[in-house]
Image (cartoon, rainbow, N blue to C red; front, side, top):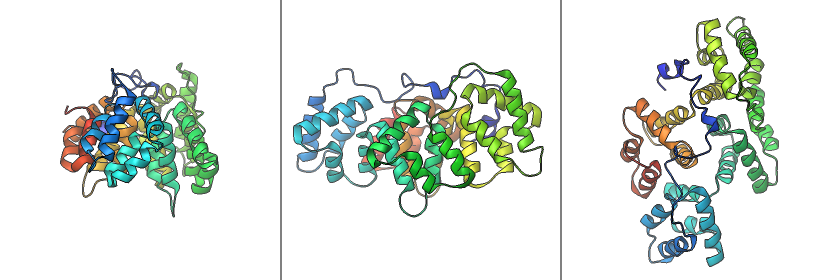
Length: 340
């Protein structure tokens, strides 16, 4: 992300709290006004069970219904066929297009849980996915994810995370995975000064870094509180907290704490940056692209599009069109919701 955006602290203090968005006019995917789950099931069955799958019908329906409407379609589909829509999509489509449709046909909390499971399966952990999810989700989303994870695996999310991540990165991730960030709207100015000084004393002012102090403050304080602390910190240290973290730390802990700072400032800008990386350079990160487009489609995709255009100097729609082809690309463009 352009440095001047992340350095612009004056504009963030009174900006709307991205974490407080509950979905509304900022989403690109809206609920269909004259929705009829039964009619959609008939159309989906015809598209799937006919001679050859009609991708256009699958895209038109699944990318133009809200997540709650898609859940209603899944229930009606099961009642009508005694099969799950997800299983039929897996049997009739393939590759990235299949994964995108399955994501759309999966409840948001379950999809988040499945992405966390995928990030932890096999040898090694996909830390970037865990960082993205836990740095950007609200307490409510994290708790819904954890409940879905328990339902899917019969194990607690924190139990599995403890086995997969370690050190101070693990400590920070586990704090976020509890979903207990302070949600106060009021800002405690005395705490702002205390926290800013504590962060400065724990990093720039001393030889070595007290990472635990950074973890405690960044993983527990409310978003309005953090924003004021960022401003106070720059007054004390002469540089932004993000730059201090990048100077003082390394590896996954640095990546996680920087992600928290970016999300506290501007969640849509954080996702715009992630999307740019997913379509930039050689090869496309289809998994990240799919996850962000689906997860943010009803929350803040219009704001993400605006931030993406500032960053990439072209629209998200155009970036997808130039980088992704076929039914996968067509569906992503529909979710994007426009060419602006």
